[in-house]
Amino acid sequence: MPQFFRCIQHTTTCLLTLLAMLPFSYAYAGEFTVTDGKADAEISEVSRIYLDGKLVSVIRLDDKNQEKTVKITTPMGRLDHTYTLCGEITIRSPEGRVETHEVDSDGTLHNPDGHHFYALGSDNFTEFFLTDPNAPEAAEHHPGRSGVCAAPIS
Image 1 (cartoon, rainbow, N blue to C red):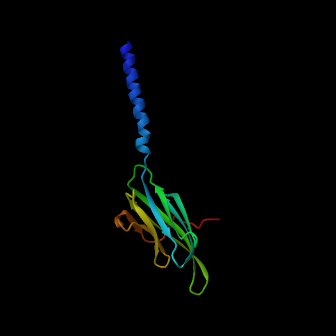
Image 2: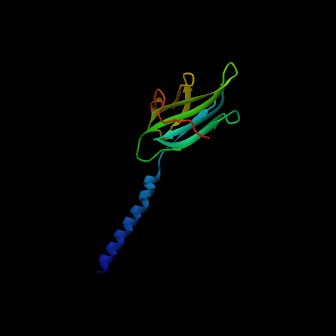
Image 3: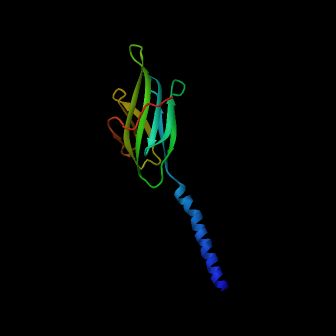
């Protein structure tokens, strides 16, 4: 009988050790960075980054904070992630008027862990997307407006 209890004790110890290690092996999600910068024509910019439908970062830019880089953690178990960029960009028109433009679009990041993406706008504030100049295949932009973005209420 004592041998039986030693066997159970040894099995229990092994199981507890495995269970203790399990969370650590799965707890490490990946991460990537995104840099957004204020263009010269902009007075200010507020950008929201959604990953897999969840808000993961808000970036506020103005003359005092012209560029910001944020670190984003990816959920476990996936290589591809959907993203949405939502932005409100305030500019001064050539006529001197202050105008706010809403920009947004969707895309897919392919295995983004370890990448450094830049948030870029183009086509006269109609496109807003992520790109990694060192690995263009890591970010796929879906042209057109996103159905996710709504102007934030302050």
